[in-house]
Length: 321
Image (cartoon, rainbow, N blue to C red; front, top):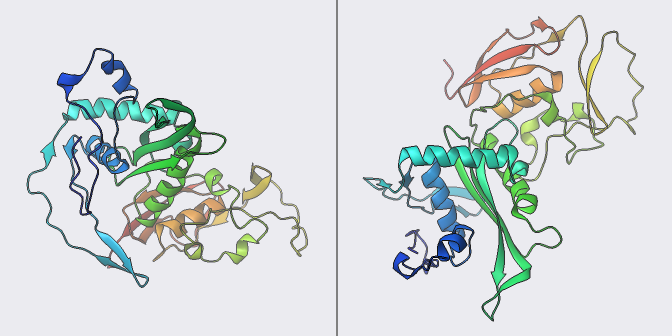
């Protein structure tokens, strides 16, 4: 029932009546979302308080776009953060929100390479006569990632979705796509194992030869999926069969993992986490990531020969020695 004091005019307060006015039935109705109203900004701010251990942040508008360039807007941070929930309570809630994603209604919000936690929402819209509609809904998902060291919190709200209308069906997948690409853009260290399987999903570039995607960083970050292309329709002869070949098939698309005598490890020096992850997965190598920024060191060394499926370690940093 209080505005967040964000740097925007005319912020709505939401709808929360004083507890002294609650009837016994309100304990049940409010817990399931009836008789209460919150703005999306209040919702994601609450998620931030859970993610950071119980401290309520004040949201700010910190970036703006002008003529295609990004300029930072300075603001004074709060000197003393306001604690609204105990750390013990937030730990319990985090466990619950994690299970929503791993085994509950928010499975579609599960990220590739990162842990995530959140909650689905399916709200009936209030009609002019004061009753809740049975045909108009607001589907939502609010969550954060990674779980142990959160970097982002996101709320997705979809007004009157057509067809499917549950938050777990229509809002959670949007959260996943935005979160995955934002975390990669921010070069956040993955806290889950990255394997060739997620890289082999069908994407925008179906039908194009993978070899032509020399620089995966050039792929449009907001609109594209990493993809392994279809071999059908390419004007190239079929490759000669290899003994002991190993491949991964996902949705009918084939990704060759490698064959004896081994795979040559690329030189990753100076490349981004996105590039290294893409190239490692394409070759069928398991990637162990340390740090963030650009690749500085790696083991095994560049141009070494390793067996298919071998694990390689790459250290990332902001500055070269």
